[in-house]
Length: 127
Image 1 (cartoon, rainbow, N blue to C red):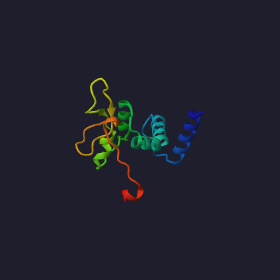
Image 2: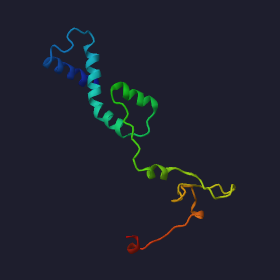
Image 3: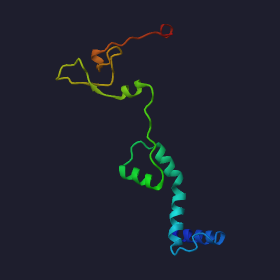
Image 4: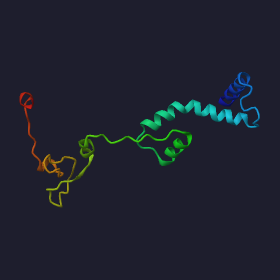
């Protein structure tokens, strides 16, 4: 059914644009390629800008069609990238070997909850 709709679209297109690829024998193939790309162009544009983890083959195919991947630049604030890192607690003994994403605010060493101190302020003192 889609094939019939594509042929009908080609007939209408050729009626409105008789000089379009007039000297080519494979007009139908060219029309179908352009039709397919125009139908998925919005999705390709969205996917190339928003998808973070795509297969290398898909990234390559998007680049061939003209939608190169937009790499997200790291934020200028260094804390956001460091807070996502997870390393072993620098104070724990080897048998415990705990991983944590909490860092000391002074020396930036990774420390687990057991070896860190949390300070709690009320709303008035926090101001």
